[in-house]
Image (cartoon, rainbow, N blue to C red):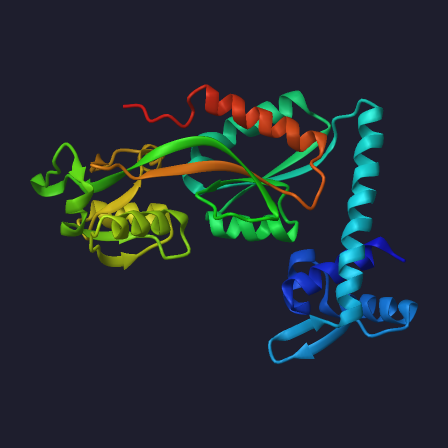
Length: 302
């Protein structure tokens, strides 16, 4: 059995779509179809069924996915152990980071990685935590930094940093914010915040509901840069970490004040899949991340 065909089949089942799987694997849909037919001929059974939304695995297909994941994990373990036995720190690593973290960590992380592991390759993907979690589960990423993930049996989570959220407003036209904003008064400010898929939005709404605060949400903007542009123009107020503001380049007319009584705290974790072995290069890269955090790269400074 061709391992590439097996890997492609698993990806098709995970996406439930030949089209999406082909785009992710960067191959043609017709090639994937041929690979599936070859697997079906080799195994003497149908593996996929079409429905109105795409494709689903048959009972035999589900069994192949279960066994196939184990086979691919064992092949990966063997490859990693042989490489480590030769003393080679090589391979490819894909790590995901939220945009506000990426602007503070990515450049230094890549520079240190290249210096210490010249035989290895690193890829850094910036996206919202919800997207990063999905890509971790689908195998597109080896590890990721995530904000406030829900409990997930398929993931290992290790807390690495906590940040308080701030109310961010414009200083144009003499606008002023108090030195701090009690959570109970947050409903007095027209908010521009991310969509419900964003972990920060979920955290804000959960804490507001816990303390009986009705929020005035005027706009939903996921792109932090665009959100802050609108805040600076006086359209509304943002609720983000200080790092989101400190990562903004150039002169700006924004001010961040803490939300208090109580504060809203967002948790940053390192996430790795439980269903795949962690390679040595992944472990070493996460050690680099720990170094950067310990150096205070994520601690707000004036």
